[in-house]
View 1 (cartoon, rainbow, N blue to C red):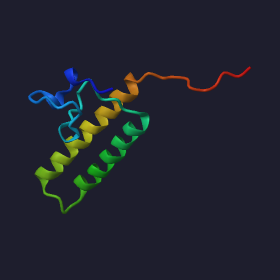
View 2 (tube, rainbow, N blue to C red):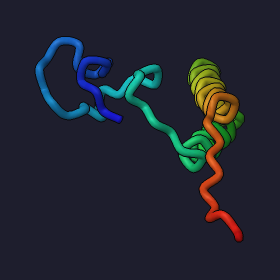
View 3 (spheres, one colour):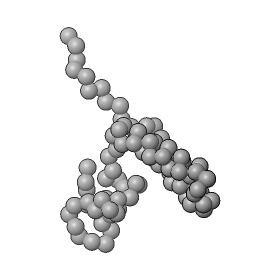
View 4 (spheres, helix red, strand yellow):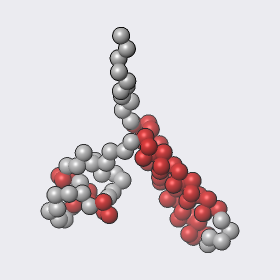
Length: 92
């Protein structure tokens, strides 16, 4: 799926491979599977659990909650916009 001309991670350099450390969730090159979306939801749950901990300061809890909401939004967008392919063999 990598197309350098559309890569948000390469706005200023000329590298021909994606820079995963600068990956942007809104990049046109992203291809998520259902498994990836499910993992985003699992990670969001873990962040929410951390945010609910009494040992986490309020500002950090707020940041964790915002991040969890963002990850859930990405997963929701995947599930609502995905292309459902029937990959089963035809039966005859």
